[in-house]
Figure 1 (cartoon, helix red, strand yellow):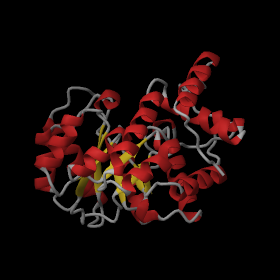
Figure 2: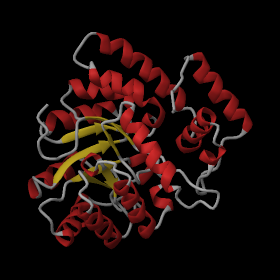
Figure 3: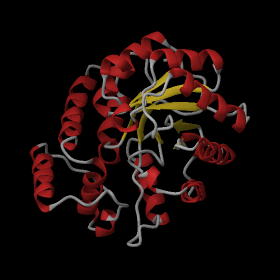
Amino acid sequence: MKHTNSSLPDGVFAANLTPQKSDMAIDDQRLVDHCRWLLANGCDGLAPMGTTGEANSFTVKERMALLETLIRGDIPPANLLVGTGCCAFPDTVELTKHALACGIGGVLVLPPFYYKQVSDDGILKVFDTIINQVGSDKLRIYLYHFPQMSGVPFSNMAIERLLTEFPTIIAGMKDSSGNWANMQRICQQFPDFRVYAGTERYLLDILKCGGAGCISATTNVTCPLAGQVFSVWQTPEALELQSYLTRCREALEAFPFIPALKQILADHTGRQDWLNMRPPHIPLNAANIKSLNTSLDNLNFKIDYT
């Protein structure tokens, strides 16, 4: 793998959860503690303020304060891929400038996601505007391709045009489409473009294809397993480890990620405040909790959250 256009490491990233207090304010200490645990248990980096971090339920001011909390908590900024994409491009510019001032490794940028059927020209115009208004040679943008959620995909043509126009700034992509053929095609078409799969089920596949690794919601709890796969991905042992990791991911996919992951952490820590989340997200009901626990028990899935 030849990934030199960013300080971000290859490997396993968690799209980390955002712990909250009973009033839904960010719980700074538990946020830092959770991020430290992730980095000590298989994660090479973190992607705060992504979908799993409930980014679009927080204000610009709250999002900037969260990043400052992580920096004060000695979370290495070069290992952070911070979500800064908003519907209003001035908010994206403000968040991105702030992230750069904090020394982060990269920013993860959604396309403006309210309007649908947006043309490639429209997407190019948005990124041209953001890049020029941020105005920094240190900027490294990772495209956040999540068409099921955003409704606005990045086509191969749009990626090619962005790379042609901004070859040092457009550094890579998180592909959360779940479409392996698309990830594989992008890795092959743009060999120096850092592609992270949005699910650990494709961790081994994307590494073998020349990709950078994975950035996943569920690595909030599967990171020790994913870290094992990454550490031995070039050996025969990786196949069996990946098979088990994939089964764990598939079990978690049966439930909405934010409530399910927070439920798992509440159960493992005994701290029910893990269940605090901003609406429209709500905790799992009793039937889903039982089903989730049964699925994980059947896999003998356990985490040492200490």
